[in-house]
Length: 385
Image: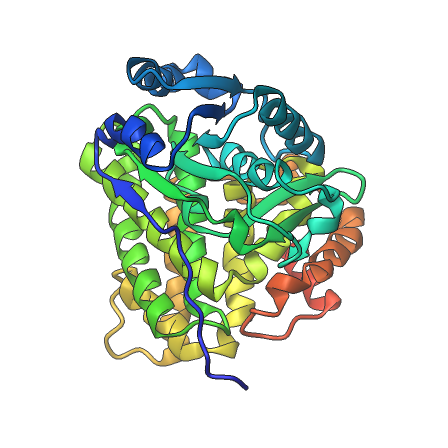
């Protein structure tokens, strides 16, 4: 087994409350003359896109907007955004919003410069040419997609979420302004915050984890665990919001290089078929997958308990690992995240097909600390009905 490690992240990160004021200088630094803003209708309605576009207007930056991004975006939305880019002759893309808007901005940036069909790019390193330059402005502390070379889209025909992985998807600039997250509803804060935490936990316990990713994952966990309840209970707390955004960023760096594991593999089929928000789907599947996985690396799962602030003195590794699971179960309860799949219409008869969907996500199962079979997947889903 090769000991060579590769680390990649966005080449420039701008962060701090109010740093949206730097957007024009970042556009100019990248040589952008015609900008496409990619976002979703909710962000437009909330007035957040106005804040960005006002800055562009003041800086006399020419721009157009594509604002039809949907949750768990379909392949067709990526195609629509790409056509809008070509029609506007845009040479730089700003993606502003949550994970869906960011992912559409990233994939459209490469579809605009590559002639192939999107379906042919699902997988790893299949995009031939670099895309347009991108500036990514996250408005949730969740996906960490501003520092990852990954895009996730929904394939409605196969009822599955699929990933495109390419260094050409790495954003040119990540701009993180915590003031843009102050208006997030508590439910969104909870779901996206848990998604970020799960990125860090899975990166930490991945078979591909190493010293540098562990360092990032540990700090991400500390920041998120220490601030997620405050951000949920008091959304106007700027220090908590800032810490959550930084935690999400670090978790993104960690999993971009170590990979996520089976929790995400379980979340993709139920997210695609039942439209369960990604962070909620991950949260529901987190504790049963952790209980299954922890035997694969008890030391790592035990350390999670310490990172979560649990009292672990005198406990065995197995007891510490179980304490980490219970801590996350309590956190989900505190954040009022649904605990059962049946709340979203999942039935016993659906489980074999869902488990089959899990086994198709080979890219993630390859990182998992414990080998998983389809029978294992069915048992895990059944536990969460």
